[in-house]
Image (cartoon, rainbow, N blue to C red; front, side):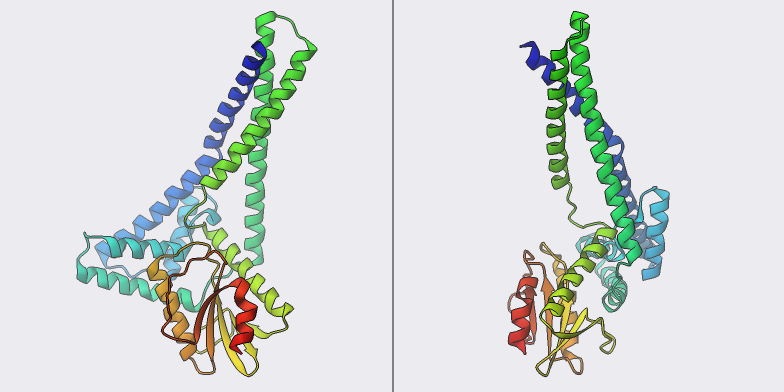
Length: 324
């Protein structure tokens, strides 16, 4: 019975130390990032409602960078300009405290920023990849260090408990401490995985959005190269810039890549659909294809324009060959 009590005490100490350490380090950093995002949102909303401010894309960028320094968090942990504008649009649209005429005017001002984003989407640079990779590795190393440190202290506490009780030190207690260490590592690792799965954000951070989007576009490019399609990346089509332009069997097909793996806000998908309509109306474009992740739920229903398709990345090759 004493052995079970000793083991349980060691694991409990490890668990308490890990939770406290997590909240004081990684948890505190995520809380600061959350507060910084809220501060950016509130600042722009106040200016739009009280001062008829028309948000400029560059202003939003500068404000995000300033809030990152103010709250002492990495810029990659904050929302992107598009995510901030989306949240502003949603609040304005849902608010009953804003008069209808003011709501329409604010939505028009936000629409100008969305036009810039759609025509000139931001792309992650190699430096962005390197910085985000370093930050993720640093967070992973910190989490691993906390698991090991808490487990070792828990194992030591279990041995110390027995030593204080008997005033002697035996080899079997050391073996018991090793068992507590292994059990604590297993428990804390499972807890870390569980917390990570529960903390997945509905809207990924600024860095994650750019990296995921770039990786998704890279996957599409690899598929096009592998199947020997003639294509160009981000060509200029009038005032628009689709992600890819494929020429196959005499047809020109524009491809827009969106790394969605969940349902998106209706107003956002409506803008994307309007963008796709503009693509097929452009001179020299025969068809337009919106490519998403295989798990994306895009409730467009039946599209009015038969030259527009919404498909998953797994369907890309067959759709391109059939379309041409």
